[in-house]
Image 1: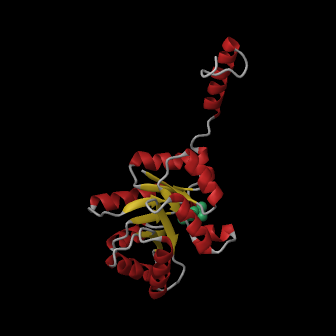
Image 2: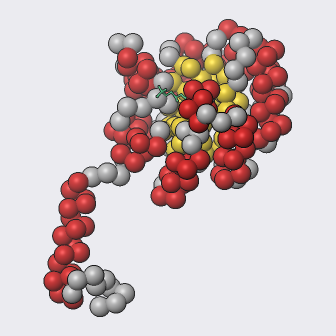
Image 3: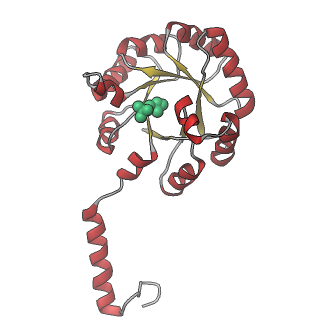
Length: 225
Ligand code: G3P
């Protein structure tokens, strides 16, 4: 399963990249707004840091297909041809996805709340569809099951579209989708950090250090004992 960072704060992205093996960065208009900076200034900084080969997903904002295509052209011009254009799966969005795929553009179908949307986006040729796990849960439905069902729809129908699961509330949800074999998850930095936080592990490591220090002296390690 690919792992992407769902944030546009370059400092947080650097922090996560320094620790974890990640495949890229996803953004949306809300995430960009949180930075308080001009969109392309922040996005160019991210692209420069992660490199041209890493996945960068950037969302269109226009409400109509023609405007979405114009947004996409600007995004690709500023950030490189391999950037994934995120398009909400609305009626207009489907038109735009179809047109973008005919031009060979990488597309992530987003704002996916239903299997129906995902299926239509897959038919339109999207590379990824992004079900919003937590937001689906908040509607009284089952976000993880929806993501798994969408994965099954693609596999059973021989469609090449992959799930890019988004909107998580805890780390366990990501592991569950990994076990199921979904293609990718995009994860907020605090949820990502939660994947490695474990007090039992911390206590075990502290015990190893204190036992070694009793043997060799305070502050001693294998390199200087
Ligand atoms: O890209 C979609 C994702 O960022 C939504 O997450 O936490 O706003 O539901 P959230």
